[in-house]
Length: 136
Image 1 (tube, helix red, strand yellow):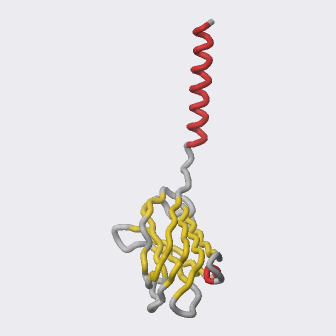
Image 2 (cartoon, helix red, strand yellow):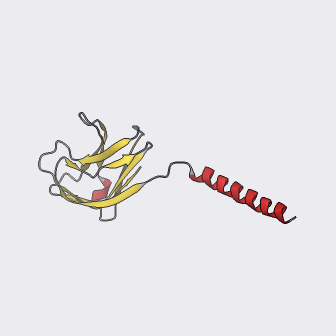
Image 3 (cartoon, helix red, strand yellow):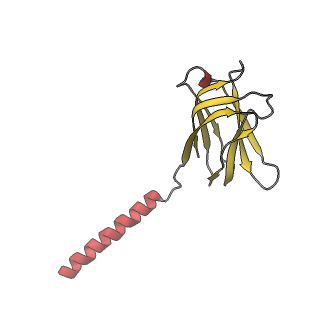
């Protein structure tokens, strides 16, 4: 009787571990946060590795050194050749107040190293962002 009870506990433990493995196996979303201070045209963010899926970038509390009240955010993939660019997002809502947020989302472009660039091609327009979050 003692060995049957032991086998039953082992079976339950293995079953529970298997169930937890199945639940935890999907890719977990990742993110990082930072801020920008006096980021000039073409400024490139840090790189991050994305295994695939949607990328979301949020800027909270923006200001610039002009009256444009817009920061253009361009998602790019870091490659050996010229880096491909994806849809440019014009962030304007984050300029309304220090707690206002602008958000851009980009579809899955496959696994790889990514970064964003701000105000690519602008002429001397620098930007400050109180808080930014990249989720992927």
